[in-house]
Image (cartoon, rainbow, N blue to C red; front, side, top):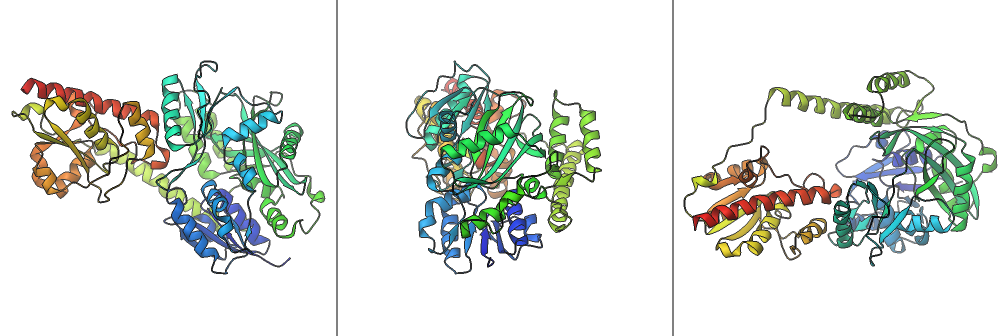
Length: 577
């Protein structure tokens, strides 16, 4: 077979690293592309010919699409293999705009509708006869179905789907455990605002079992299964340690499921069950290469190479029938993931024995039969780079911990309201971006306390202006009866400061930023959170930590704190009148 020039996306992910190794080893010319700003281990693989950065398809989705179209039009590639969901969705949406001779290595649109959506996947699996957890299909992205979770009891697992926002971000779906209808409703409001589908399920005990299949022209070409041994965190999440298993029951169920939808391509079907004899519950299906791909490769089942063979030739070069067998109990670890697993156990108040967990970690590290995601004897450089990057992260963590032990970070003391004798005419709320906390405070004050005669405005220290409030924050503001859809951010200026009598900041970073840029504002600055007398006077930013991980429950709690302090401010001003 003639070598193909293949562009592989998302090589900062383990699936991308596995694809680079598999396809490069097979003789293909691999260009590994990744989010700009990263230095992924995969680009140091001996089988990586070229590499480059691109706009993050999660944060800058439309820019990524434009970049990808332009790159594929250069004539330097024969095929494109997207390996993470944001890039897969982008390729799905613009595949018709690529040069006709470019091979697009991903499932068709009908199957991607299932593999990119837990809502549609669970409905389809249920119709195909698979056992699913007791499920309520809450919202399909357009029409509300059922949001009453009383029949499930609490706690409940909420699963949201990915969604492309009008702001140009592709938001990754989440799996969240909620303990009340009120918490669930906050997530539902967010999903309605984003237009993403959501389901609610009863929790399922047990461990995860993954079945990996490559189906082509109506038959299974490759099949493999593994059982998760460790997850991050230990209560459930991504696999950090797993072993190969021959679970014929689940493999048969998975084959029948894919046959019922006439699936073509590679897929991972995830189940969860308690013990080897427990009922297997369908969890999800992913139509992409998976993070634990290294275990399949160590076991001799080369999914990426075979998938490319099928896409380019219609059938693999060599008969795969000879490759049906693979070793049982072959174990594979992600070392950095294992460190996080141990950390999650040590931080927990229950769960596995801490002593046994530490001893197991070192015993596995000394076991020569255990394989690794990053370390391959035939390709050691990615592991060395990853070890270096992990070491840097660990050292930074120790440094910050030691620093916090000896250097106490003191929150500045600002004047109390009683320091200001005259009634203010205008007040200013400040946060970093003026797209969440300060905007909420401004709108809430002007709506509820306009009778005080005091007008509120807001601004941010960020230089970017005219940004809207993120839809996710808007959805939570709606719960409080506020419509922030018309707000556009503005940057604080000397003129704005001079026209205001009091300036309320949300956190220490805001306070220090104001002193740095506008020293003359010091006499007007007050921490909004200080009005309630709480020990922690900082009001944290639900958008700044990581916009992709915005937590609506946390956001509601933050907005509640803002309202509490605004009520106290109004009471004080009323007493001045």
